[in-house]
Image (cartoon, rainbow, N blue to C red; front, side, top):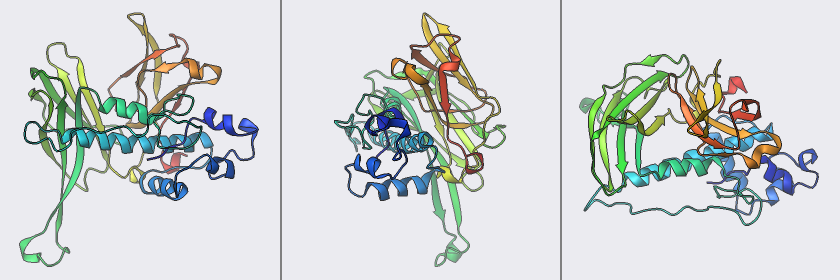
Length: 337
């Protein structure tokens, strides 16, 4: 799955930089900097089938390609790890990242571009490769009534949310973890009663474990977003986190937050960016403006926000009060573009 590099990397190979006439997707110069066969068609198909996007401004188009790549690779790594299910059930023994970085500035499969600027997929893969993770997947089963077995006319679709966890350490984790699952209406941010807490979750060593299959009412819960957390019951600290959205995202009525709080605080001599919003927000990307861009390093990025939760990201190169130096991008619906 390809993605465009950062806009600064593209400007570096355009003769006149940000003033170049070829500074748009599908220009001859930008196309020349992609050596994959049929790259235009493939990327267009992925984008069109999955998210609402725009060609202009170029920076937002770049964001959309990187978000698409991040979603693709996160899904792949999450699913592969799920298949490592313990002795006798090792259905997938690992995966290699292709590719890590570029040897030439351009659009490619890399998750770090030629100038070592990480794409959003870098952070997505990093999260999925943590020792302890939690995953979710919406599935639809076709329940055909016996009296209508030769036609789908009166069939029913049964929707479920599957939840699993992975513990890739060599030590069992029990009974220190609890499962918390919450859901929100995507348009209003209103919390929805979804699934009771599980106070004790046993995570055996070096494998994945299935936790729950939760029925979803309606058409697959297309108006809700679900977050699942593993909590250390001793310290009450979050061990793992996952946010699940309806798919494809292009059908989701995403809302622009009225109050997306982005604040830098100091914690144990470390700067931390705190993010929160009153409605669910998809794929929040942080970057530093102007000349500070390459100096500022984020520990994580491309985060999904849900109401009532404060997401915290460690950052180097910024201090409390530097909020004006941050630029925030997130996925927006067609009516918001």
